[in-house]
Image 1 (spheres, rainbow, N blue to C red):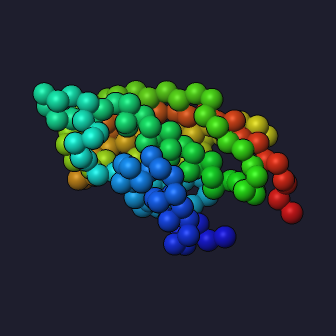
Image 2 (tube, rainbow, N blue to C red):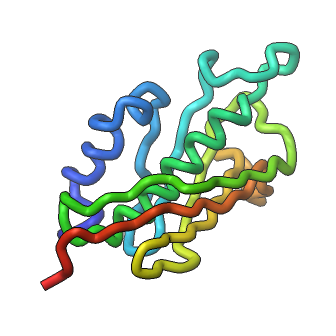
Image 3 (cartoon, helix red, strand yellow):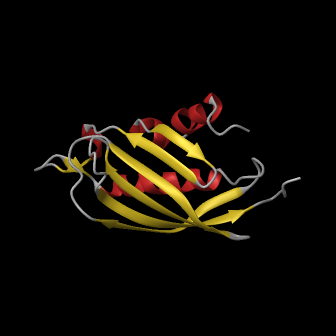
Length: 146
């Protein structure tokens, strides 16, 4: 399956309710890597005094991107994946503009997937990190690749 096809994009953007709610847009996906863009809007505000992103929303997006990275390794629709742990370090404020979140595989074992993610403001040419994180996922293949 070509990971860039319209079907995958539609699945990611429209079939996952939280992705659709957030307006998540798939920018790139390939084996071991995923990149999304999420627009800023009033529903993602955490600090009403400065109109900045809520850290929990950024964490949710990072978790989703870690899951997308894992999805590049699925061998069937019957495989199972779930978050075991996620850690996010917030490095600087996320001002009121779109963000980009990228994720990549650190390690994929027989039952555990580890990913690392990074987030930055979409209009920042230096791509200075607003947050970085690590996700650990239970990854169970119910059917082996043939």
